[in-house]
Image 1 (cartoon, rainbow, N blue to C red):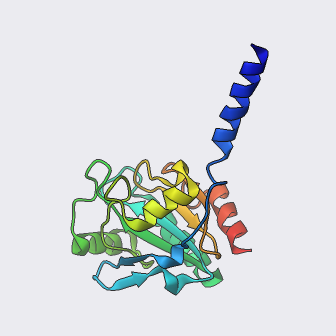
Image 2 (image 1 turned 90 degrees about the vertical axis):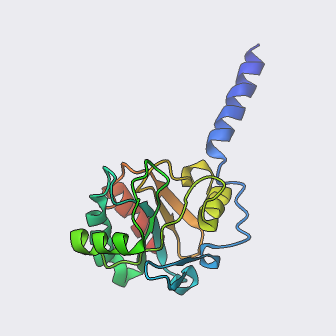
Image 3 (image 1 turned 135 degrees about the horizontal axis):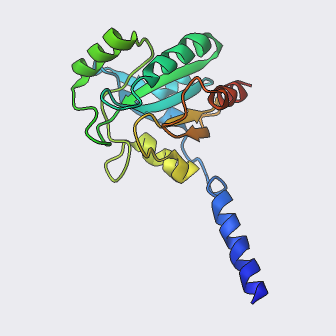
Length: 184
């Protein structure tokens, strides 16, 4: 009986910590493209050798004030090689109902956003944008947005370094430490 419990605990522990072990990275983040809010192509290959912070955003969310933090991080770290990328999504509570023009106007007028923003896409499920499907396949469940303002940090090598849930502010110590580590 004791051996069965040990075996079960080993399997449980391995399953908790093995989500990144199976990543084969046949593709890198640089292999994916979006369109920006003006409809122009936004190719992640333009950001090779940079740290890319991908955040699914929404204008009518309780976490929308994190746009300020995102802009602050962008202004502080842009010259050091960090790209902040906002990805509008209406997947959670219909909190991004507007079109690209509405989103752009809101972000610029209310928060003075200057970092790149994509067109609205789905970030979860069967209809998720290919970047988010790739993130899940290579980094596991922690890469799947559970709500708006989920953050994925892609390292200079084009692979996912870290992920953060909505409650982690982009200006929090643990988030900044993760970005600075990815910059090394």
